Length: 426
Image (cartoon, rainbow, N blue to C red; front, side):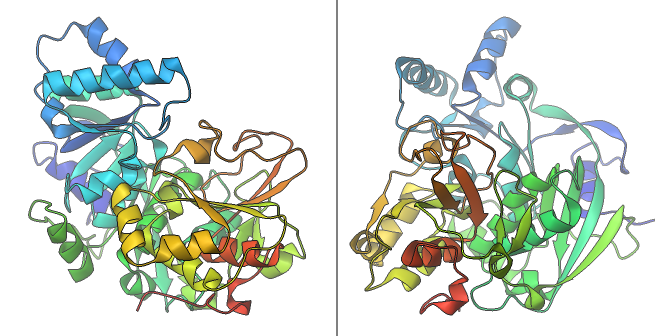
């Protein structure tokens, strides 16, 4: 019997032992990440371990992104400890304003196809967009990785998702995940890997592939992984990554489930408050007014998100009474958006552009707080009650195209019905 992509990657990192779903193994890790939300736990455990050396620290990045900039003294002290540790042990430091961990790691060329990457965040599944095994761990687990270069894994079962056709203009990877959440539920892929294949995936630009892999976390997935192709290898090479070791599943691999989706038939989707899996098409949502709009986060704060928002808002103004926040996923994205005139377009339309980081998404830095009863449409990944700082506010989740179109009209709006809403990467 053949092997899935995840089985192959874990096997290659465990003394070439052939692994199957359900096996428990200690495997070598290629790169590790800890962000400031979990750095305190990791550093405390390192101190408790009294490790004399941390030989894997040079293969790790410490990222200041959740409390960026620090909203209080406790966060600032955590950042100071991260800086000191990185300097002492040779870890890579991404300081305030560098960007979100899941964006700066691939931008920094820290991993390649076939690698195992662990990070202290559930959305570490993002790295699967590059044919790597990315998965989340706790800060205490990360401390052991720094000391040994290894971590333990239970090999997950895999769900194969075959995406046929091609997404229509104005429909994005975000809409695929919301459709899957409607179909499977928020726990529909618990501790399973998602293997995305098919013509619709091949047609996607890298930014959209990253959204697809990232958003797998909302389905409960342990990992999400896409096949590598010329786009993947060109992107990695441009960012200084090591030579790729592409992995493909065998034709006779065993899957827990195989799901087929005609991507070309999908319409823009939204998730109702306060559950990410209560997804409906924008048309089904009815005429829902909005007060705030957010474009950004590790899921949808990339350059193509800003491009599609600018395409909708160019030469126009957002609706009266609507506030709009844009948070690029990294400084590199922000600078390129400046060069392309996207930031100017969004600002002229009435949006406020924030420094790169996660703080707005999780309501830590207080950059976007809604009033009681106000309605937010967000391109973030979660709409739990209180997620943006006020449990009496309502959060809808949508693609950046839908968010921009809704900010323009003041109600939830299918982007395909407004000029520029059908923009897509050529």
